[in-house]
Length: 146
Image (cartoon, rainbow, N blue to C red; front, side, top):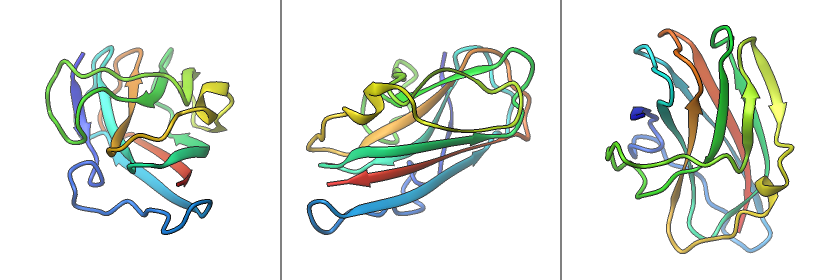
């Protein structure tokens, strides 16, 4: 298991919006193209959940990633953008979501709506359960509130 891809938001090339007032909802669609084959357990560090924000909704959309591929989507350990291969990926937003065919799904895990705010930015990752060939796209739209 390794962090195989880091999106432009994670690397700081694109900025994640933040709510400028308590209760104001902001949305961002994070996306990445898989530019090299992924192995079982590889992680795409896709999105940034800003400090003091929590998720109010999430929409995952993927191209067909391959037969038998499912994904976990959740909060990652460690600092945003850290390439350390020992970082982990949770499944708070999506757990074992089937991604073998093209799909668009909304968060249905109760844990998606109970992610507590934290004092630092956090990464949201996508961990694959099986090998995925290069050229596929993964996107996650987060609706967040401070």
